[in-house]
Length: 304
Image (cartoon, rainbow, N blue to C red; front, top):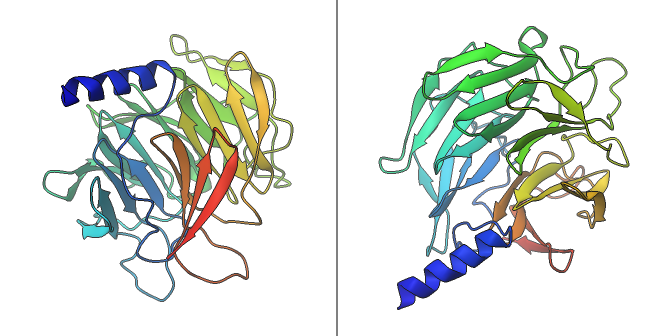
């Protein structure tokens, strides 16, 4: 009976467009980090990469997990390659870390395995998203690897494809996400005058062509921001404030977190959006968690 009730609750949540993820504690990371990534699997959260206080050279490889039902993060297998300001996605309940190459996390063994070898993709400052069995990568550094890539995770292949209109090598810090089965690009910092852009494009899956959508009110960029998809909603937060995009409804304001926050890890957990860590310029280096409730449009700060 209990199993049937759980199925009904999950089914109803999915139909309402609510993200159904692991039931995990609202626990800050074990250490202060920025430039890292946190992704949600069906039974755990996974945190990897980034910078931490001190001179520990292995922090960019270090991985933690917070398993459903547990009260604290615990260490698991390190990535094979150190990564900062990189990307991570989930495909069919498997986590992938993207930067230079691609690694897949095996939750059963707690190990990372190479999918795409190093040297195929940009190192940092790029945007990533997953749609189907493909990973999309846009922009980043170094400039010679700054392009629009499609990674086939089953073949381990990397293909350069037509980028959004106006893209130039060296453009970076875009927002990229799969929303409602479509690939969206918003904002970004151009490589010339380094101005945040107001662009918004969606990619036609059958042709690979880009179609313009209504632009966000301000220019958007990801250095002091983060984004997460919850159902049919795409939430973007940063020094520009907060916005929510919904197909057919356009851009609507949302409450942003207070002050500047550089490179936190933003993820959807259940019905809320969480921002783990991040660097507060001039502020204390401590593990922090910010929780956003879409129903009340409010943030809550949790400090270790």
